[in-house]
Length: 171
Image 1 (cartoon, rainbow, N blue to C red):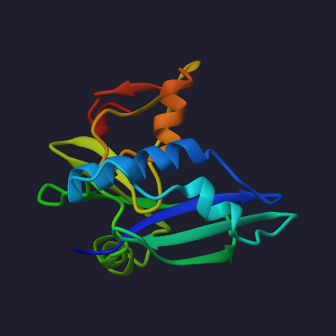
Image 2: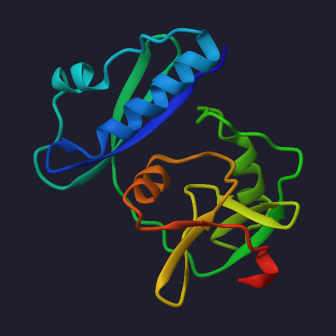
């Protein structure tokens, strides 16, 4: 099996939205290993020394057990220019550690800051996150992303965004 990846925002010593990350780990365990008893992220993080001030990014690699965890500085990605890429053949139902598909498209489009993928003319997501678009007073996210991210799930659950089915030409 291949390594799975979970990335977390660490803010002033606390893992943000841990419940949604645990839910995604649990779903991967059930789907990939037919196990309904994934490791506890809460228990794992209680044993970690997290930075008490500032914003950081935690990066956890795992399969059936945790393989590694590292804390990295958080750097905001400024996006001024993007391009659309057809992802018709690509499937990304789990957050794999192998990000070569995304890296390939970024490297082959050096004139842009980010790549936005689409399938059948429908926007999916970009290389680092799910997308949200504003239309008037409402926020929308693509109905069929490559990966159902934790922030997307949380914002949908909180009714802060709605799913959209518009083709990219309609945005």
